[in-house]
Length: 216
Ligand SMILES: Nc1ncnc2c1ncn2[C@@H]1O[C@H](COP(=O)(O)OP(=O)(O)OP(=O)(O)O)[C@@H](O)[C@H]1O
Image 1: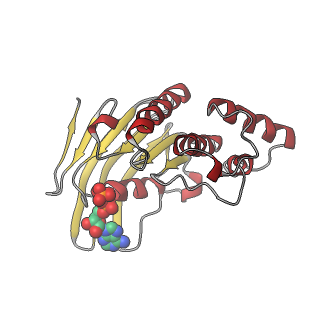
Image 2 (image 1 turned 180 degrees about the vertical axis):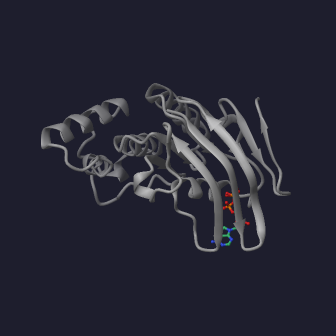
């Protein structure tokens, strides 16, 4: 179930942000994307999900688990997202926040079963009825990841998911997220400014239209 990106070019008006980038991410691999502010990291993730903002154009092909997904609408791509803000609904308890990630059409007992499994995986059994405001930043980050994974994405895109956590939590959450991705065996692309976040391969985007792929 690998993620294969071929010949991606992205333009903002007349400016070329990314020029024919190709890369492949293996199942369970976390490839990091680094580069200066404004070079197009978040735009690349937006393009991969099929959610380019107005004013940006893109071309290229994305294959996920052997299927071409670049022509599909966003909700049919099978891609999960995690951001620096946890985006949990503050007025919903943890259980309902998790339920929001579930696919449609499951029986009540199957929904409960999956939610309990997610709580166990997040090491937060018994927190079903808590409000997000009653959780620590690290606990919220773990619930956010689980909510994303409950939709059973075939790939995960992470846009600076640890940047708002303090140093102590950051290491713990990072380890939790990386271990979970490896256990699920799905490919992941991680945008970050922090080299310490990068577990494996680093893809460096540069502003002068060049892209280099390094193995650190
Ligand atoms: N809707 C838009 N229309 C035109 N230009 C845009 C639009 N959205 C972003 N841009 C430009 O595209 C470029 C890339 O933005 P992007 O957010 O992808 O950069 P980034 O590498 O993620 O930066 P940072 O590290 O600061 O988050 C920037 O120069 C930005 O001004």
